[in-house]
Length: 139
Image 1 (cartoon, helix red, strand yellow):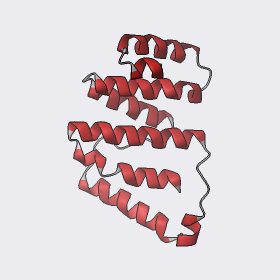
Image 2 (spheres, rainbow, N blue to C red):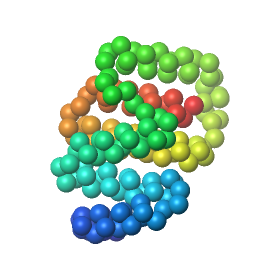
Image 3 (spheres, rainbow, N blue to C red):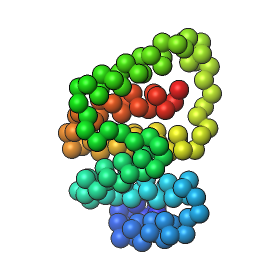
Image 4 (cartoon, one colour):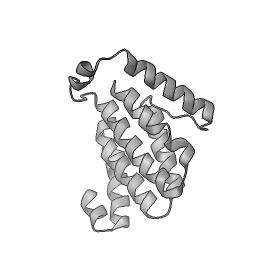
C-alpha cells in the first residue's frame, strides 16, 4: 500500500488498504493501513474524512481529543501538561526510555499526522492542544 501511495496510485492504495483492514487480526496490523488511508484522503482533498478517520482511531486508542477546542480547554491542557512536567526533574526527562507501548506510539503518530492536516486547512484551535497531548501521552 505504501508503494502504491508513493506512486500516486490512489485506486491501488484504496484496494490494498481495504484488504488489510478486512484481514488484519490486531489493531497494530491495521494501523499502517489507517495511516496510509488518512494520507490519501488528505492528499485527495478529502481532508474532513481524514480528520474524522484520525479522530475515530484516536478515540479507539483511548486518546480522544475534544470535539471543540475553546480557550478554556487549551488552558486546561496547558495546566495539566505543566503539572505533569513540574514533578519531573531534567535528569528524569533526559533518562526516559523510548516509548514501547504500541498504542501510544500509534496515537502519537496519528496526532502528528492530524497536526499536519489541520495546518493545511488552517484549523488553529485544535492545533494548539496537539503538542500538549503528545507530551502527556509520552510521560
